[in-house]
Image (cartoon, rainbow, N blue to C red; front, side, top):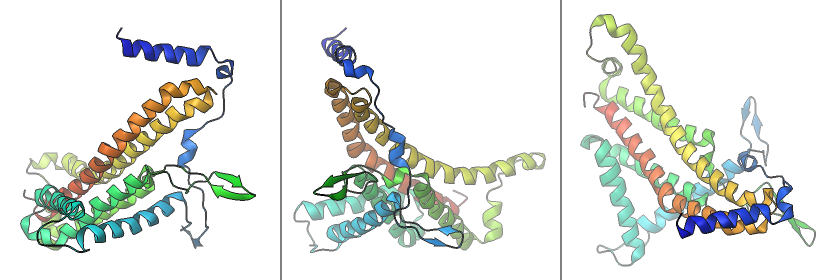
Length: 292
């Protein structure tokens, strides 16, 4: 056994065996961090439009996305990039254009759909990133001088399936809308049927229709699962300190939580935004030119 694993095993053993309080289980339920409680109840008939934690993060993410877009793409731009801000803005633009739009959309459709896929990529990136910034948007509170204030916490709006499903529904609707607009309804839906013997059509056609809806599930669940899993791992490692009521365990759990935190912020946040936007461009492009 190498020195590092041996040292870690010793630390874990000491954390679990030496402190007597470690045997007394505390209360910690990381899944409760993702429950949606209405902060402001808004009901219009059967529609529940209440403001929850996810809605608050989406509103904040929308404002931040607009500000980031204006700062990087509009404010004091020069013909030759000067400074890191404009260079970063051009880098984001090039990724959205060359790696997302041009790879998935036919050339005739880039002008129409580039703004959508670029905005989608930037918006998802911003709300993913906000999910790792400690903000006072929490259901938990603490008291200072008799005033209750919300605690700092991390939460990703995209760790809610309803949020990622709504984003996926936008792409799903635009895909079929553009497919019908570009090809006509008959030609577009006929493109779903592969060139197979007629006897196989009753089996193939339902599978092709199911495949269209599986795109919707794939888009929404991929983003939701990745963001939820990352936050759950971080909360679980930190929560071990309170569950086992052992401060010594922090020597192990905090570094591991930090590693997962950095991995999510540096890699997962950007990759998930890119994948969602790239797949959206591919789906819309395949609907416009189904023969490809």
